[in-house]
Amino acid sequence: MAPIQHLTHRTPQVTPDQLLSGFHPSHRFGEVSFDSYRPDPAQPSQAGAVQRLREFSEGVGAGSGGLLGRLFGGKKKNTKSGIYLDGGFGVGKTHLLASLWHAVPGPKAFGTFVEYTNLVGALSFRKTVEVLSGYKLVCIDEFELDDPGDTVLMSRLMRELSDAGVRLAATSNTLPGSLGDGRFAAVDFQREIQVLADQFDVVRIDGEDYRHRGLPDAPEPIADDRLREHAAERYGGRVMAVDSFPELVQHLSSVHPSRYRQLLEGIDVLVLHNVHTITEQALALRFVVLADRLYDKDVPIVASGAPFSQLFTDEMLAGGYMKKYFRAVSRLTALAREGQQGEQLV
Image 1: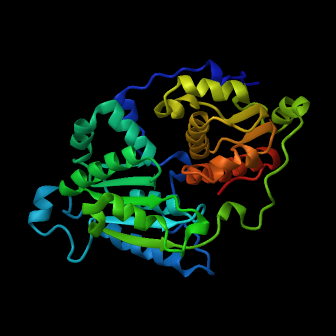
Image 2 (image 1 turned 30 degrees about the vertical axis):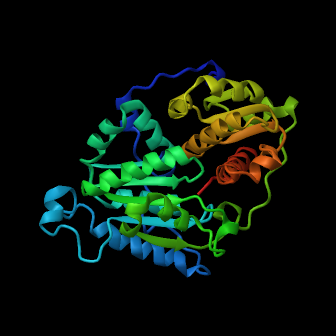
Image 3 (image 1 turned 30 degrees about the horizontal axis):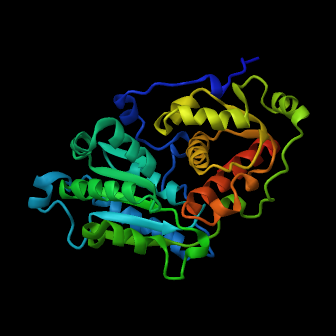
């Protein structure tokens, strides 16, 4: 039987080179393609987005990168330097963004908004620009607008990369309820990046969260005294991290979010005792980052305590970071369903 691990006993150290080496789609999206994306027939914008991205991919790497490409016609006429996917949770934006990354030649980078801000913090802004300016494509998943400082930083980074001839692709984290009411993220995105606004084609993707299509609500948590038994029955022989939820939440404060990927290295299943509502926003935001890394690695969660729908307070779910929290609840619910019912995530 594989030994039990404890995330609270881990304090990984990560070098800048290790950060750079991680800028590729996660294992979950390691082999996706435009052909493997399954558009919802009831949502024609999904099939339309696939076609738009196929066309965009044809202009990447065909002499379009760098100053020489721009001077000698590498960029196709009427083709903007960037493409921006706007849509609700679970409509496949990350799948499509990763498919674009797989479809074009390198060098190229793929990471979340937070991972790029962490990269700037590790390398410095100028070094990050220097490194990424040599890439043909930079993909930014889940562009976030809830932190003005980080938004300005990323806007400046994208502007300098665009000036260097790098093609850009981004996704938004718009709430499903915000679509169509004049407040969808593309409008805010364009306002924030100003100079780049006219260089981005915005592609709207409609649809419901695929993780909940025809599936039951989040499963009830498992009784704490049966937690280890349930995990052993279902995942015996796999590497399990077993932690007290309150202790893990506190431990995250001592580990920089850029290291959460390494924090989970080698872990197949996460067993959490006594999940409860997080009431401190700083701790909640750190757990959101951990949720994203768990989802990237497709780590099933077996948990006791409160269901993940109660992980954040009502004030958090209605506040400025609501998009992050709703995404985390959606992803954690899917991982908990997999952990309890054995459903494999798509």
